[in-house]
Image 1: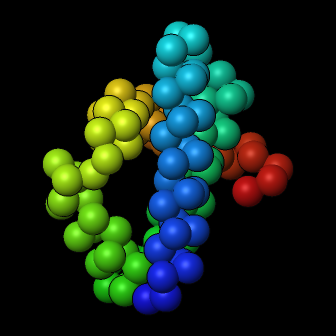
Image 2: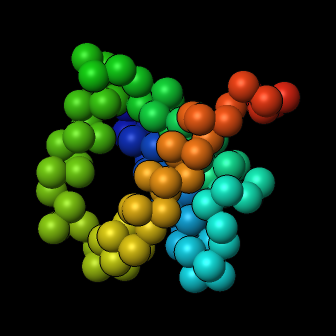
Length: 102
């Protein structure tokens, strides 16, 4: 795994977490088009990280296991947005058949 790939994955993750945090702060309904897009972005992120046997997935899982060592801001944002991302992802998976872009 290249260092550049790790940085790219981190910034993709951070963007989703920040967007989800903003939506949660604004009490955006999970069954909205913007939440659908967060769910879609999360699905694309998971696909980019790869299946459970990929090197990138192993790096990501190792990083997740060390979450208590993350920068305080990242850990706060992740914990704050985690349920929103999970719910948006489930909503996306349930309704993605009608998604023209994905």
